[in-house]
Image (tube, rainbow, N blue to C red):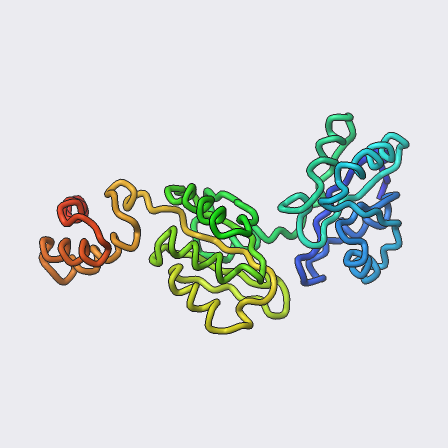
Length: 282
């Protein structure tokens, strides 16, 4: 590899399975002058595994502003720097935004070394629509703020992708079930690429039950995906759970009776449900 001085490399590292480390990433890390790592102890084990002895430099959310100045100075000196996070692609709900911004503003070349990303990994196996999606990162820790954030996304048609911690996964899914409705489709991806990887799909109510009944399902790192609001349900003025109920009942009952039972089950006006049923029949 021909080393280029004064270059910032943004290097993706494995989520868990070390076999996902690319040869190009190893080569870059071996040849740069300095590695900016979120957690030097954690990354030290990774680098040792691949025989990388490059000096590391701590760059995390609490010191990013201060350390960015030093890293820009290093680039001005003609030296090269690689930016890595604890796992996956840097900057995706991880530190590094400021240093990349500063480097680009200063005219330095910023080179991506692509690789694992929990967002894309989870999307690729979710079975949910992937043509359009929105990544929301970590939700607020407090329930009130979390529910307000979710309520702002109720009418979002794109697939929703979130990160969540083991400490809040149960409460998070319960709030999603309440806000989006128990019938909304979703997926919980746990410990991606690791030994105890699990990818569980189903309706939100089923996912709450799945994660609650077994403590092992509450361990590790999570990506939660939620199907966007169905355009048909939105146009008909029903939530997806009510629309599904109406569809099932209409297969067995006259529309008038199906609308009445659906309205009673979901606390809706019978006339509105009846009109929605007429639209489904046309």
